[in-house]
Amino acid sequence: MTESTLTKVVLSEDQIPTHWYNIVADLPTPPPPHLHPGTREPLAAEDMTALFPMGLIAQEASTERWIEIPEEVRAIYRLWRPSPMYRARRFEKALGTTAKIYVKYEGASPVGSHKTNSAVPQAYYNMLEGKTRLVTETGAGQWGAALSFASEMFGLSCDVFQVRNTYEGKPYRRMQMEVFGGKVTPSPSNRTHAGRELRLKFPHTTGSLGMAISEAIEEAVKDPNASYALGSVLNHVALHQTVIGQEAILQLEAFGERPADYLFACAGGGSNLAGLSFPILRENLEGRASTKIVACEPKAAPSLTEGEYKYDFGDSSNMTPLLKMYTLGADFVPDPVHAGGLRYHGMAPLVSHCYSEGLMDAISVKQLDAFAAGVMYARAEGIIPASESCHALAGAVEQARKATEDGSSPVILVGVSGNGQLDLPAYHEFIQGKMADS
Image (cartoon, rainbow, N blue to C red; front, side, top):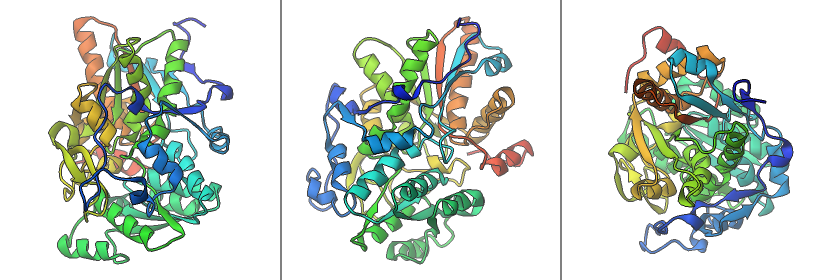
């Protein structure tokens, strides 16, 4: 196959990664440790056992470069992995750009997003430890759906606190979770002490991920048979997502495009960005590539571009360990934009560390610009991207137009982390001209 005819690369099953990649092993400076919220000392393994199984705790603190993926996890990965990579030729034509745009597409997973890459191993390690129930939060609903699916795979029940804004605005996400067996509660709720306190403090709130995290943690620690599960931010979640970037490297090679000049991925908590970019960042660090990695966050929750790099809590009730991250403050409540998965006050500590070290860049994208890029992509390529992924596409559009202006032909890699089939009301609002900007 020649460059002029090759449009899609799907790897074979035997090319599904056998190990997760841990960026900590290759960072020029070690990332700051998580701190105990009481003592302000580095977090010990025993400090996390009330929330997580030991298998995940070991991964959270690991400095090993490669961590083997259990065969039971890879067997479920085979339902959708390896995920495809496309040359977005019609999108290029619509833009009239001289750039070459490649899309790594995670929307073909069982729940339609990249979140299953971590939900499956999290459910697996909890099953091994004898847990029977997982409790979590979800922003747009992708993570809640992924954990509901993964819990069903390993015989666990799943309890999800969904941010009220998307519980009400995206009812099909709730229905999707329920199909997979998840029990869904809008947050903040009256089920927990944290929820009741937050409702008193913010009586008309649309909710936030920080609030939902507080409720999920409180609910999990009350039940000795339960664990808390987090869909982004923490090191072990970023680790699990690196199957994306490992596959992307092989697929770019098949296209004859090693390396990409630019990488754009949406970033809320940071797991999607980390999953695509960390294996490619390793190529940068070892001198085999010089890819410019760009985190694309919403203007409504611009933690990297406008936040402060400091220790902060991951939830609104100050129940989590202290994490060194770019943050807008644990009590920050973003505007109720449609990209619910990006409405988080902080950024993953590993992503934050890489950004602080100058290993990646960041931009913030307004809601209307994001959806304009998403609609253009959908009409050109026939894939409706998740509203979160529209931010990455908007970043790529801007770079592609710059390339056309200066006559260059860069290779642009875009992570489309999920499909937008359940985001259609938001697209309708945009097309009708009724959508508010950030």
